Length: 272
Image (cartoon, rainbow, N blue to C red; front, side, top):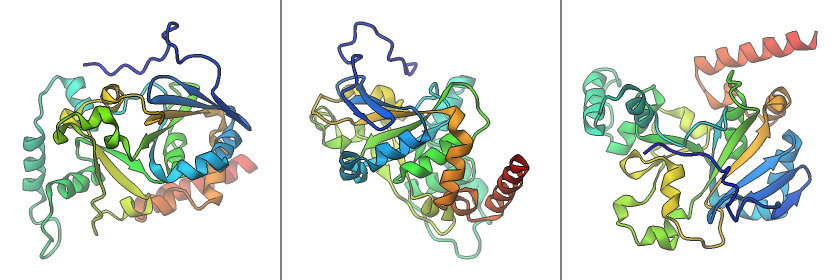
């Protein structure tokens, strides 16, 4: 099934006036368990996360940044299968990766669980059934803005409830139909630690946006989009840099050094 991100149904009872407003942001319910938080600026985004109510709930969510409003919450493996029409089974992908890792993990490599193998593959560019998320909304915002994409006027920081599997609609499902929250920290993946990262895996690689339709209304926003104007990109990246959130800290390797050097040089050029 194609993942539909549209919220333009004029008959929807949820597309009305903002239910909550703050200094530069407004919260709109878009469904029984979904919402949009529309920020007028980068400062509006910062104000939202300094709001007392948000601060109380922040630890209950994980976050993911997208450079476009149109991008789906689906894994790279699912996306590649949709684009090519090739049915790559998860088992075949993982076993092929394991085979080609032989002799390349150093001396006496530790044994890995299936989730750890997928996490390792994700780190090095393997198409996997995992989606990267972070415990930090600011890390997610960095990845949303740190892109050359100009597809839409807004970037998006997605938020997802950590308690989503406790919803009555999910509890009625078999455990294999729940979302999996995975935190496989490996010595070979220092990036995951620096990015306060974790992975989410959906049953049968289902798009998260479609999967949440199984939930019952319970007064909680389980999936939300925070929309921020793309025009705020350079202000946002400079602000995040002052928080020590940049390529240099999030990618603790030579790739991060190179990316951050480019950022510093380009920033100085803009100041001239």
